[in-house]
Length: 383
Image 1 (cartoon, rainbow, N blue to C red):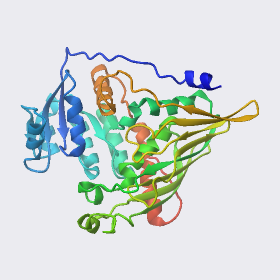
Image 2: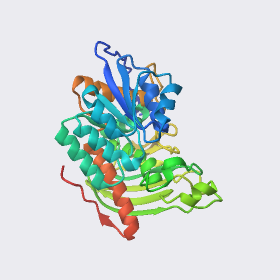
Image 3: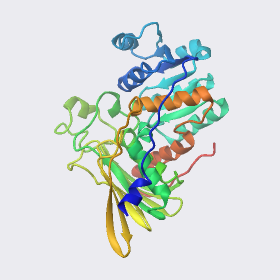
Image 4: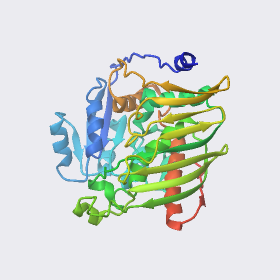
């Protein structure tokens, strides 16, 4: 049983070749922390030239590019002035701003005819997500959302196991994760910049992990809960940050999905326990346990376990972690490379908005349900 199961999930090795005959001209909107991963990846790509950037804080972009030794980048005080001046010269932009401006920056870039790689979460509300998707459709340009865990071989393994039929019909999923202590600061902890807290920052990752594995069924209803007991308490957070903290540091939800599937979700930036539980995907023929992590922004927390009955006996098969292999670059690099390859070759978005619209609808539904204190229907807008 073990060899048969494991052999069918062995990932193929791939070699990467980059066509350098055409240089892609790229812009970066927002030069904060997450932009560091973008520029580090772009610098490794011989077919990319960073030509423009924008940041609201005077002098920040200049220091950013000086620190990374990138010269000749034209700098602007905001996304509109950059795109007004540079749109015809750009093949793509990375949008690395805080959550509350994701929608406006993305929509303006698409309207200017520029392909967009948008960092997660897609935005703050389902209304913003709808506007983004409509702008994408009207523009005909490429828009991909920044979920680099999709590039991880262990994450791909989860989807492969589900699609193999080894678990049978999926009917219940438990997912989430988080940190005993891991509250960020800066723009992450205020509604005016972040819009949402742990729910959007790391919750979107665990939702994508399981929803992608099972084919992104439509969400139907949700009962949600959010709190910020630890984030607002100076015993557990920097006093200055605790005073301005007004987003969630914990969220939980019970979500009904199409196909008679239940999704039991919880996520935290801070809690009085090391984990709210492993991810479990239960089916009519078997179940898969995926060890929890603090964030889900990369790979899984350890070897997975496949539970099956074989010849009347209960069995457990360990699915070892996939080797990192010899492929060039980390997950962030692969996320950006897959986007740029799609731009170059006219391919589809590696992480399409048609899927992440459901992710955002769940996040928005959790927020709304928590505010109302009851279960609500999740309404998916027509695009």
